[in-house]
Length: 120
Image (cartoon, rainbow, N blue to C red; front, side):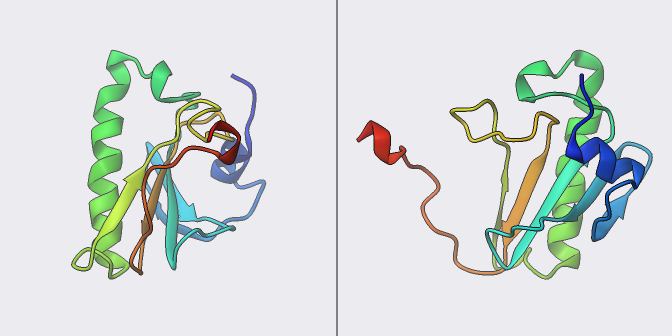
């Protein structure tokens, strides 16, 4: 897999507003937030998309979800509610080909589904 903006953020060559890091996971505030709280949770292993997860990756995927719950609590959105979203492939809205999950909250969130205007 080629280097992505997320691999550069994880290695520290691009700065980020980090909120969590361990040996397997890195989480940071999105620079173009779609909600008052918008954190990206990324495995350090460069997995291109959800479609590319292997059996040996399942533990880190579960851990990412545990980190999402922990961060929701720490960031004050656990009680009011939040979303954890993964975009997979171009039709799913994936723009960076390094698996990542969006933690969104801090306000009443809008509709989850939608079809682009070009398909209406």
